[in-house]
Image (tube, helix red, strand yellow):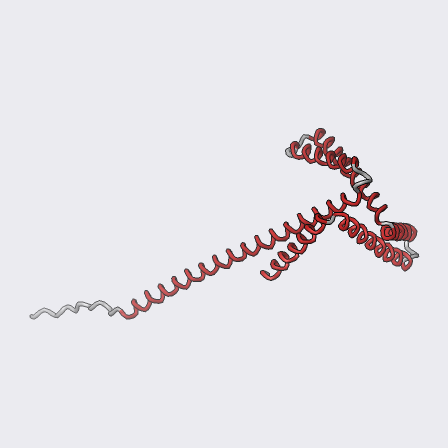
Length: 215
């Protein structure tokens, strides 16, 4: 189990290293992320299309075939033109932040739940990020996605490191507590054995025998 948490720490360190590299070379991180996403779409589209052909008698054949074809087309476009794909994804991210911020603000004002303040704060932050990204679009498209990817990797890596280190500490504390408990139990058993031995060694008290009185 401890070795498994060590693997989490190593994976976290790798992610943090990749995040630092991405923050230093955001354009490279953007193009790499777009290409990886494109290949994922292409492979997923081919797999979906093959599955749809194999299940062509099913009711969802045309839907599966259409989804697979769209994924293949999107993957090919992203692989062949990563710069244009980065601009499109950046615009989509900006609109996503704007819509999420608007929904948070409207929902927070309408519901006014226990997390009212945090909901409004997150909504305002989403709106600010969306406006900033949209204001710099498309000139900074090669840097925006790389920055987001790198920050996501950084937080994921730090989270894995904290989980691994914290779990190792908890396991160590549990092991030490168990060891102390076993030592105390052994001492109590030794004390019981010593008391039993002393009870066996101690002679029995003499019994007074009354002498018969003279007639």
